[in-house]
Image (cartoon, rainbow, N blue to C red; front, side):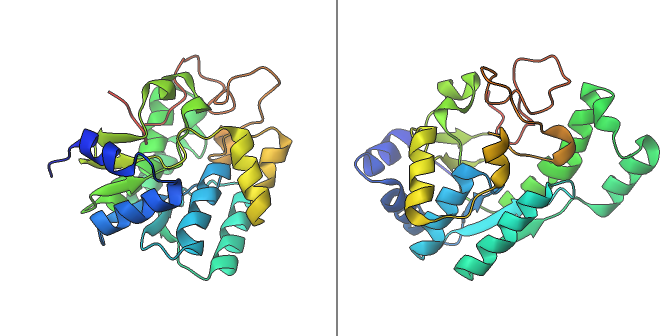
Length: 234
């Protein structure tokens, strides 16, 4: 698939996020998806898609280790919009082999083990979710971490061989909160308890004042990039 990022950027330059999402849905009919983990940003985009009947498939990665609060938001979102959110689970055999060999918390023991768990629970299911798609919508924002400052709101994902678009890339957290309040969007209450980024329960903690946005993810690891590989950058 050949993609001219400059041309696409020009096409959506003056469009708001909803108009841009419509543009991509028309441009990639049946081959466009949005991945949600039910955080602030993803709930905003889910509302944009569902409330405006934009034909974009919405999916989530059901790792099996999510917070109860996340499952609550998931269910409430289904109830509110009456639209499907597809769940992609880890392959049972691979997950079973890992847990049988290393136990249920091997990710604490080494970076290699943590990456293995992320691969089984998130990366492999993501590959299935994106198979045959041409465009992937995400809730990434520029201010979320230092390495995301170097990204653009439209990019080519060589790893998955598709276009990625981040419709609220330039929004601030205050804009996110204001939009949620204005539209009465259900959100994860862990955000109110110091969790800016919410992933699997064993791998996410609240952050302290002054800490980086991603400090609560895999906090036991000494590394500068707090990413699991879902949004790998070159």
